[in-house]
Image (cartoon, rainbow, N blue to C red):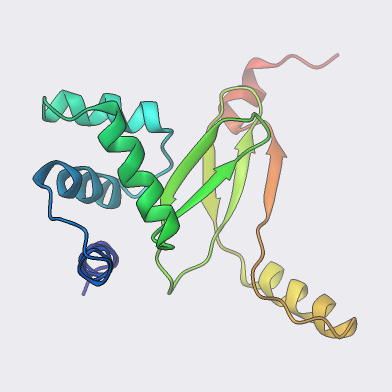
Length: 150
């Protein structure tokens, strides 16, 4: 089963559990968001969706993302710019982020050495980690080439 299918099935399960009516528009938004598998602001997602399907309102997109966040099916992040972005959650994976401060590009990465080091530090201090987030800020390759250093 793909990560996307798993997340969509979890959404359908939560929808039934909480007695939420099935809505074709909401389901389209959720499916699109999950399949895209990347970070979106509400506005970015709305603009992408309206290219493919008219009749879906901004508020439908907003409410769908809020539900996904509430049900732990989406993460909500602000990468140092006070702009809220959402990304689909797959409970079986963890990744961290490199954030370009020039163009806003967000690069996801995984690194086993960093994960182990975080675990070792927590263990050294007798600390039990329930969640963590690593965000590194700087310039991506493309922006770094544009910047001329003296």
